[in-house]
Length: 274
Image 1 (cartoon, rainbow, N blue to C red):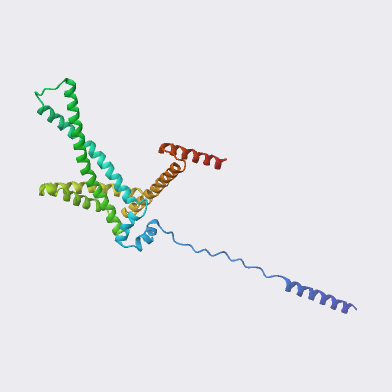
Image 2: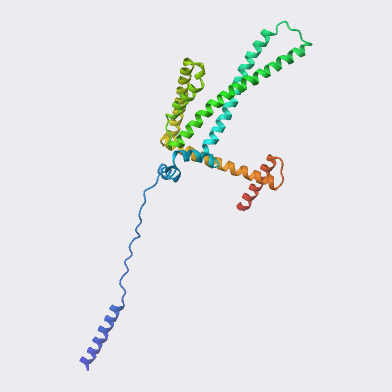
């Protein structure tokens, strides 16, 4: 009996150990997730791989400036022309006023007028006319030369899809030589020298800007263009909102619509903050 009980006991223990061993799950092997690190793509590479620069020809890039809204090239040219005209108008008008005063005093000695106030009035009228005439002439020349330089520089950059620092001195000398060609060889040489010197100054400014942001001259130009067009887009969106407000609520004065929009934006911000 003892041997039989031991046999049964051994059979029960052995069978239980086998069943326990068969039901024990194998330990799960957890492998760490494999992450594939991608190399960072710089801004310059993204700009080079963009379809605007690779899938378009030079003339298509130039024509796209006039087809899309908020192009940096056109806005910069417009601003340069306005500022150049204003500066040239003031400088040319002041110079013309000084010359007009001397000319008037030299050619009107001994003339009789109806009264002292009439003499002063005629003198002021003559000075105003000469100021406007000299201002418009000088302002037009400054606007034409400065606008041509900026226009050619931006369009050559768009055509070649690359900006170089030698654009400014070469284009400045070329534009100056063309506009001073009627003055003769000496005038053209002076214009070439002035254009090269002013162009080198602009190139130095571009290099300093590129060094400040730690980029090449071409990368600095692209960065400047992106930032400029971003701000320009915001300004255009704001102008469109103002126009829509004026048309929707029949507002005649632009400043009133601007004030109304600012109040609405302030109310929306206060609601979101609450």
